[in-house]
Image: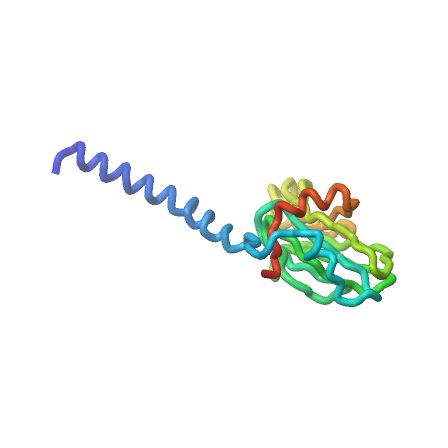
Length: 174
């Protein structure tokens, strides 16, 4: 074998080894992307029970979240997706986390009314990213603060801000 061939073969192996984690990450991230139907006003206008409030939860970032309404797990919210849920009145406790075995959660409590629609966006927590630099101890300290101590935050939006963004997303429920 020539010296050039050995150098090329070695370079090719190094490239393959360094690119493998990137390809794996891309493949796995696709698993947590919503692929259901698009959000439309007619889809969202269906109410399961007029005595309940409609809760629309969405995210425009990658990754998945478990979503709980009043302590009961409802569904998994996938990246670039939305969920349409219902909640009994008068109080909503909306909780998201990154899944079993993860550190922290975000919990939002709000008074709600029957037959009304509420919009909530799931955002990446900037302070959690900073806490992650200090490892599990930093994450645990961050997660013990207040109602939003995990990797994600919840933000309520008015319909005028939420609807144009929802039209670009897919249903996480299928």
